[in-house]
Length: 480
Image (cartoon, rainbow, N blue to C red; front, top):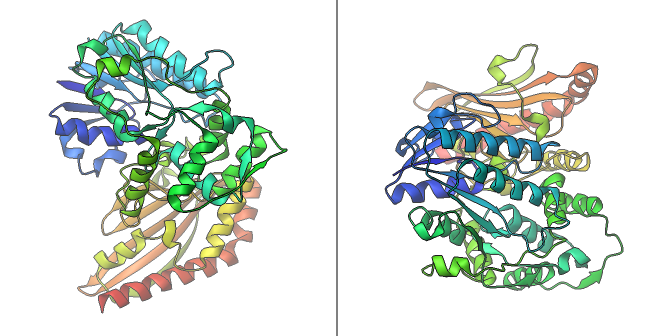
């Protein structure tokens, strides 16, 4: 069977692909940026197609010869017009799926108990399902509440809010009920639905066995981690203020947290037993086990995907590639290192995340904090302490190009009066000597952009000069 999988670069899509390949299915992945998938371990086993469902261009190729399709596209609610974008994507997807004879669409939507007073996020999820059904009759719509897994947005919010807030705030939103589901169970349902004819044209609610308040979920997480915190009544209940505070203590951006908080107002509890009847072989794990599995993956550096990989702030979505820009200011530093390119590149790839930036790390963190305060993404995290793929996130950077062991190009996704990149280049001189060049590029926007860059020039000089020396020291020690 040939399957079209949209949203292949997202949190769930990246985990679904290798499991579908293992089952023997032929996978077509339409993505806006093919580079994101090219250097993955499974890239040779899938067909990668450059496509954008916000436009009606070359979409036939995405479905040609496919028997069924997954719709896993999600705008992550950062764009001001995210609902319109989602509806456009769903409409184009459904239209071309029908045109090319796709017999079944599997869609993962959101679980809601009351259809009144829905957040914009949940209204959009519901609308997408209706749009898909208007084009293809056989749509299997799974509706899930919060998904718990290493790297998921819901897990990250619970994790950081529980660990970093000094107390558990007693607010009405945290008293709502929900039924969390583990990522492994979500994947099981999505895969099983391919050949389960009983699931055809059904709306199926899926969830774990536990019905919990969000405050109870935080308590359980803290108990697993060996902490205990008091519940204190919080006088401030403004969602925007709460999202700002949570954004400061977590890697999640304020817009995404605000969307999640608004979704907390209503209960998210499964009301149908259809999932149990159609998929009796799937026994969803409880919430405590979901958390334990997620933490185990993080500790073992086995995180397959993270929420931030598919989240690009709307203010940098249309950024141009560095090689296409003109009028770019650059600041370069170069050193010869007594080591081979492989060892030096390994050091470069490990920069950021928990390890930090090797030199003046507090200054990088201060810049991330300032970015958070002005509504930017701040210091996110990285999926793995040593591995990197094109288009993955690394703190407030995104990997724009990666050629091992020669080049690493990072694109800034913080709020800037312009566009910025950081490039690491390695050129071998002989068997045990390599030239390392670090270049910071900035394309200023207007006068303020120029003032911003040149006012920070002395600080950049200290940071980058110190960074390249630190990379030299670490690489030469490992050579010895």
